Length: 144
Ligand code: ATP
Ligand code: MG
Image (cartoon, rainbow, N blue to C red; front, side):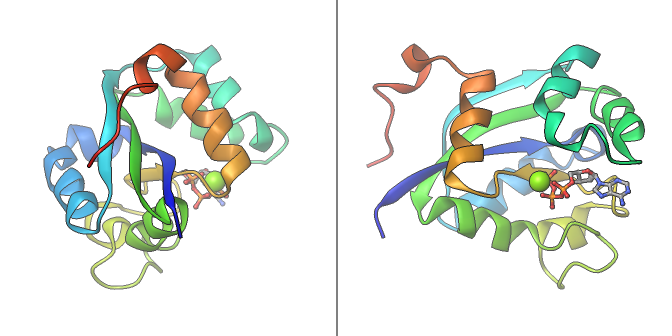
């Protein structure tokens, strides 16, 4: 499997709790290295656009409220099989059901406040990376 890129967010709950560093360490130990990273406070419009696929879901308004409640770390991670690897390190969506040792089990609270986001497919990774980072920010970056 060739080197791949995925998009990751350390969500407001994890940043507020001071767990961003621990999460970054766990991702890095798992073979994923950030090639672009920024601390941002999402606007309502940005959160709605980013999670547009969930617009009709009952939890959408709460999700947007949560994601705009404080600063988040947005980042592009690179590594072998990065999309699947990131999802594996994150664990199941519901922090209460996530496997022991996964990021969501360790740093999340429930199905909404679950510490991290990760792209779920190559097409979504491309959309999500482009949503936050320009080609100029990414073009020359690669971890050796
Ligand atoms: P993410 O897209 O954030 O990586 P995911 O792919 O595991 O998570 P999705 O189904 O895409 O899960 O849901 C997006 C986010 O919406 C979840 O991470 C969570 O914060 C929130 N969410 C999902 N399902 C629920 C729910 N039933 N109730 C409340 N919030 C939810
Ligand atoms: Mg998702």
